[in-house]
Length: 440
Image (cartoon, rainbow, N blue to C red):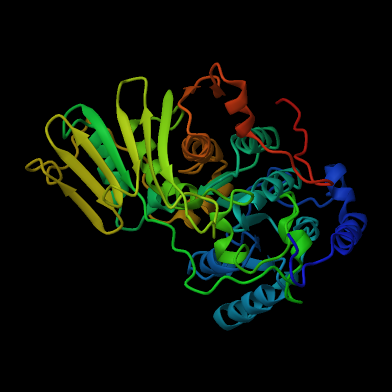
């Protein structure tokens, strides 16, 4: 198929090669990060933890602008120059000082000795590499959900956090929502307020695709470094309906609403079931796809997870958005701004001393800062984010293949099906590759 105005492959590769030559040494030699930040030397940073943000489009700019985060942001980085300029402008208006700007290469930011920690709010396919490189550079890390694009990336990120002794928080903010409804729901469920749990129903929205007419492939805008935006993902010609917000509906970069909203509500499911260190043992799915093939992820799906206890988690567009725990005595339902139960007084009675009481955090960013100072794990540590993302990824593997799978959550392996197991990772486009992390 011919594409109008497509970026010629030779020009694309030449541009990518220039990027590699100018900055590629960091890819192969993480020891070139010679900076000695307070975090890297093991000292607890003062109140003025200095943060650089990688990815300052929608979610990154939202994180940057919170009252807790804004005073700490000293640098911003993006592959889109207009995003960098707008972020610097907003920070100047909010804080009165000038943040450094980096475009496109986040590795230049990681070399900055004036930065203690980084917040990563890039597209999903760009979560793992910056997070691992940041750990190698002695920076603590906050990574937006979903933590990863693949299960294999999650293994590498957990290993890097532990080996380099970094605090890595996953941005699953429902664990520390200001009204605390999600935490309370999980405490009541785990304390038996609705009896033994039989089923959990997780409702997700459908694909919110653009109403714009389809556009042909073409040249990327001048402000966007498209080769760097692609990074480790396979080469594709530029199309404005594949980048920025819409990246999440293509398998090369994300996992659709399964990883967009499922990473939130399945994280609460895992929390409420006490499965933060485990997961399901069997997964199967049904799905429907866009007949016009405007995007790749399913337009509708129903995924059934079975846990070793016999509990079934039903996830998809056929359920009330949010998380509904169904027990032998009734239900507890929770979503943003809503906490309901059909069991009389289940939500009214305070928790007794012998009931389950979970960690309290009323501000996800503050929890991260507190953990940086104390060196104690945050409320949604990288290992928790990895397990919750894994549930999403397994569901997507079932969706994409139409095959039932068995999962060993202890070994984190697909059982008895090598073809399915290949979906746990994907090959990075050269020269990008996951660093090899030594064993702790």
